[in-house]
Amino acid sequence: MSSQPLGAHVDQTDPVAEAQQRGISMVQFFLGDPQSYKGPQVRYEGGAEALRAAAEEAGVDLYVHAPYLINVATLNNRIRIPSRKLLQQHMDAAAEIGAKGLIVHGGHVGEDDDPEKGFDNWRKAIQATDLKVPLLLENTAGGENAMARHLDRIARTWEAIQTAEGAEMVGFCLDTCHAWAGGIELGDVVEQVRAITGRIDLVHANDSRDAAGSGADRHTGLGSGQIPEDELADAIRSAAAPVMLETPGQDLHAADLAWLRERL
Image (tube, rainbow, N blue to C red; front, side, top):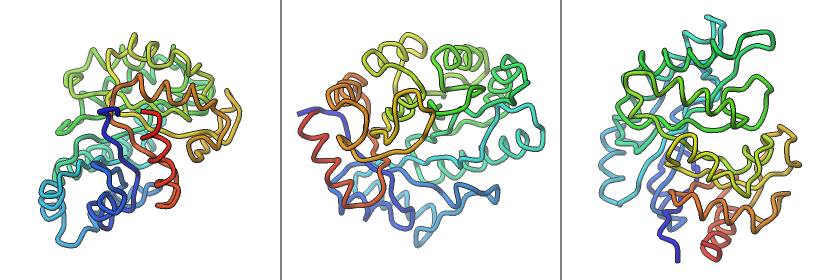
């Protein structure tokens, strides 16, 4: 039996109860609307302090996924500046609830933009953010100008981040569906990512509805998608990090947790 903790993305209203219903030791959730710049909301009854206390008492680790809208790499000031503000707001909220990490996508630059400026914008964002909990950079599935889709771009983004004050608070979240759909071979993805970052702090364990290299970010239940089961299990196992499911719904979580427990 693997020692990797297992968790799932859940509704944020009562994430501790969601963890207990599934028999898992960690959960991930959004704080508010993932498609809004309005800022984080803690919907747990009693607020942030009560959620933190409940999670600690239950022995449940909390992770927060930042809004999808955040793109600190872009050269468009109307997106980058609100993105940095929103990132700080979610960082503050994640710290208030005692989260173990805040996961954020790598973002992208425009079709005609110099990607080097996007890498440097990541450096600037790290320096401008008061990192109170680990910020976990997640690889993404699509976009030719994405900062964290292809391994060479992940490497340049990571290199830029390492020159920033506060870089020691930045970790990496490996999404298996995103890697597959993004065109990264799963057979050695862990080795390749570790060669770049030296670490994998969290695994988003997802199968893919679409073909390798499709660029499509569409998750499906483990073993029911297009990723060969052995490759998927080997990648999750070799990452030797906490494992978070992002497949939708408690019924599917139960099946996916059983799949993981059988193979890890």
